[in-house]
Length: 244
Ligand SMILES: O=C1O[C@H](COP(=O)(O)O)[C@@H](O)[C@H](O)[C@H]1O
Image (cartoon, rainbow, N blue to C red):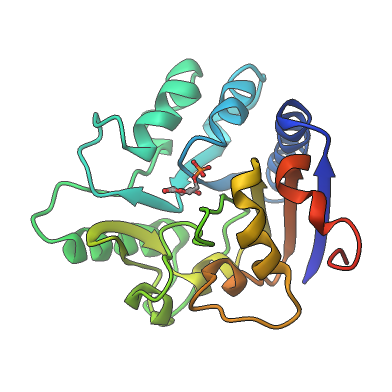
C-alpha cells in the first residue's frame, strides 16, 4: 500500500485538491481500462467536490457511479446519500441512467437490500461469490466517532469479511455499507476530511497502534493507493510525527 497524506490550508484548497486527484484517477482508469468505477461517500464534506466535478467535461458514458454506504431511507429523503450526489453532481451531467448504481433502500429487510446490491456488484464486475471486485476509486469520509462508510464503532458490520455489502448500524438505525475487505481491494481510496471536530478521531486513526473496533477507519488499508486529504482544521496535529 502506498499512503499519501496531505494537509491543505482550508476547505476550498482541500476540495480543489480532491477534485484534481479524483479527475486524474478517473482519467487514468479510462485510459488504462476504458471505464472508471467510482464509489461515493455521503455526508456534508464531499458536496462541494461533487459540484466541482459536475463542471468538468468527462466521457460520462465511461464512468459508473456506486456508493460506499447509504442511509436506509427513500431515495428522495434529505438524508439520502444518493439524493445529495444526484443533486450536486449526477443530475447536472449527461451520464446514462444505467451507469448509476444506487444501493436499494426499498426492502422491508435491509439484509435483503444488502444481498441484492451485492449480486448487482458481482454481475457488474463479473466476479463469483466469494471474490472481491476492484473498484478504481472509493471516496470516503470519517465521522467524529472514527466511522467510515457505515462501518460504525463496535458494530457487527466490522466483523463481516466474507461479503461485499452488509448492513450497518448507526445508533440502532440500519444502513447499507461496503465491507472493509471490499474497500481494501480498491485501486485508489481517498479520504476527504474537514473540520476540527474530526481531530480527536484522526489522532486515534493515525496512531501507530490502536483499536479498529473503536476507530473503524483503521481497517482501511487498501492494496492500492491510500490518500488522506485533510484541511488544516482537521489535520494540523498530524503534521509531525504521525505523517509517513
Ligand atoms: O454518515 C455518514 O458520514 C460520513 C462522514 O460525513 P461528514 O458529513 O462528516 O462528511 C460519510 O463519509 C458517510 O458516507 C455518511 O454516510
